[in-house]
Length: 352
Image (cartoon, rainbow, N blue to C red):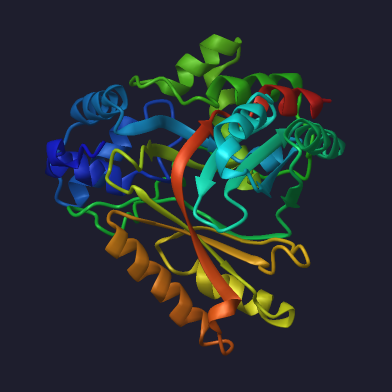
């Protein structure tokens, strides 16, 4: 599904401008529209709201609102790889997907490890139990690849049109708040996280609507969201595109066997490539999985995707002599499951 042909100049400006840094103030569409007008895009706050609502309803957006950083809310998530025999692939996928702890599951091109899924749990100790159950049910070993270090998580999908750099950041609007070092949530903060995890209401006063839904004052909601942004509990606030709808259908997971002593240098360099959306260090599994570095790329065509993979390889080659056996690209061929990260259990378990 590629809906970009139905997007006009103003739609494209909105999508480029507000994938991060939307104002957290009581009436956010007014300063947002003013920022677009300063960049030559003539739009009123009412028209901006109408367009965001339409794109949300049509599936151009996966949602409008805050992108919650689940890791900072509580619990843990981990990436897991396994082999599903070709003749039993659908059966194994059904067995894996039946576990409510499995949030995402993809079939990927690899001669052995062809199934990749994310396990999300309220407590890290549960990961071992879930994987043991999956192994017992499927008869296949699992390979746990938890995040060792995060270098980038910033999935921006830009279009041809105004504001091509997507660099509008209005997160400084609103009250000045100080971050805290508190990791646990209060009951009110938990209620706020659960209310916004699926998106904000697409109205002129989204934060006031959230406040009414959870029985809080709008000023408290605004200040708490601003603080969450400063503390990393929220990655960004804005329009969250459905990248498939925008034509970004090629999903390439590049994996690299980076010398351990170079990972700290390589990570930021690869993360600086604007088309790299996720970038992590993960453990190797001796004899099965030699790679310790993951960089996710997205492209609108197979050719564009492969070109971007090549750019990652060229940047890697600035640090060491990359051989053919030192890397691979696993393109996704099928989405087997894609649900939420079950923040309710994770947030509740981390509520003081």
